Length: 260
Ligand SMILES: NC(=O)c1ccc[n+]([C@@H]2O[C@H](COP(=O)([O-])OP(=O)(O)OC[C@H]3O[C@@H](n4cnc5c(N)ncnc54)[C@H](O)[C@@H]3O)[C@@H](O)[C@H]2O)c1
Image (cartoon, rainbow, N blue to C red; front, side):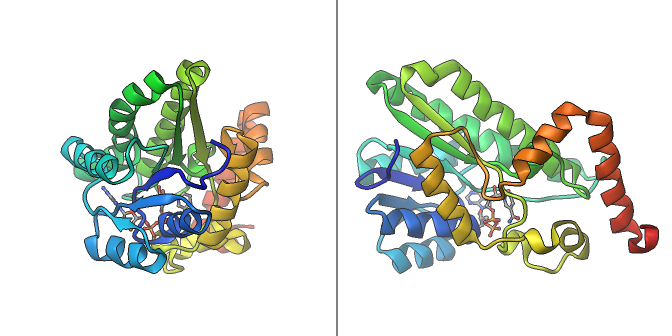
């Protein structure tokens, strides 16, 4: 799908940040939108702000995804575009407790798997379907400070790639949004390490929505609201050791800004 006008669209985690910006932008472009969030009040407020339909609930659990997709189909008919956008950041390194690792897997990865399970049948049958996964530059590179986020975002990217590889010739379009820092509830300026790493590159969620509209028009798999991420990703592939050394330099700077 190159344009959302008239399309039936679901946005998970649409109660704030990037999801809210996507829902509002899609509505402004003439889409019929269902806004999901686990925070029912947030979903209702965003839906009211742009005249669309809230469907609150957990977009990660098997039952939650089934309820969301069922309610969205009742509202929209078949879903044309599903934006698997909800995501969470938890923990630090391997010491992070299992419940936080598990929550990261559930929301950042299994939410996408479970949605695909229910969406693919009708989409492949009609030869048309569009999935946009909000991944992160952390899924292409890594995010110093949080292993669960880095690992699960790599997995989310791998799953999106797998779907594209397997079903592109059957009418499935898959795209992955991979921003660096975006000023949202997840990156509210209160974490000095995140601010030190992302610095001046932080953008507003509306800029991500702009990049998504442009990315849908050009149809490329990777949507990069920060274009510089393409060179970083290429650098990682071209020389992993040099890339790791550069990332370790960032880690040392976060630990001690005088280390430069
Ligand atoms: N903010 C950034 O710098 C940044 C950068 C790259 C990628 N991302 C990704 O963007 C996506 C959106 O995050 P954001 O930055 O807008 O953060 P945010 O915290 O503002 O929004 C995330 C929303 O998802 C909702 N949510 C969490 N778990 C849910 C669940 N199980 N079911 C339904 N809703 C759920 C939250 O209630 C919240 O409203 C995430 O996948 C995140 O990893 C964010």
